[in-house]
Image 1 (cartoon, rainbow, N blue to C red):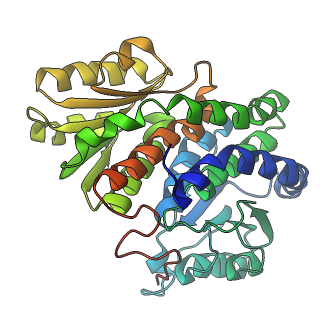
Image 2 (image 1 turned 30 degrees about the vertical axis):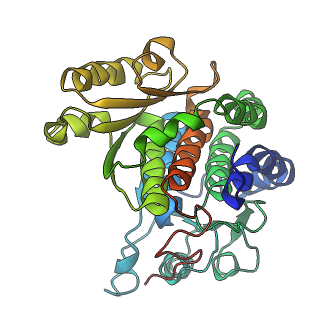
Length: 346
């Protein structure tokens, strides 16, 4: 395995999740009791990696809680100065630094409109936490590598725990408690695959596909490949990809497919067959043998992960792929060019 700060932080994710669950579970339970019955829908404000966690929330809360998730448009609150009516909203801001002014502005306006607010952040003294009614601390310790990894999976965990706690579903909470072990096993399974990534060091563009719970995983993997490798990488759901973008696939085009065994498996497998016919080079993340066999490069993940928690494990091979590809290209995975750890947007 390579030695880098980023690799260390990817490897720390199981312990980070374990620490988060240990420190925040009772706190989340108390918050759920306080907000229960006081909102009709959830509005989430986020950018970048945190926005990908919000995409996960759309499926978790939609499927598990039957709660509608809306994604905020922060410029309405800042540049246009025309915030919408937030009546009935529980407003969540997700930001690892808790400092981005546009995300803080959404929380401040929600507070002005008497909506309950929650900060999901890594820093309890951040502006986002300061202006929120409640705070979930990610417990990820400071991330030193520029690309976010452990704060992303900790954000997924916080949303999953909130969903299960709102339903008072002890079985789901027990499933969540198993994720540190599953994530550790996921990391171990990738050791033999990383040496094969050098094949892709000259790739100039890539597509990442996922659907359902793993729509968010496709977006996060694509972001990591872009950040660390300066490669044009576009994420799609398998449905949207069929509506036009599939036309760009030709012989040798690399397509990264997130395809675990879940309710989307048959749809994704059918798409893989289409991509094969067009000559695409398929890279897969899966725990289903038939799909792993279709990959020119295949990243296995453990079997029998509850489908609603698969994104916490499935993103790890993508993180490692992006990191190792940067190393093969002679780039610094800890300090990619052109980006900083904390980004201020308005």
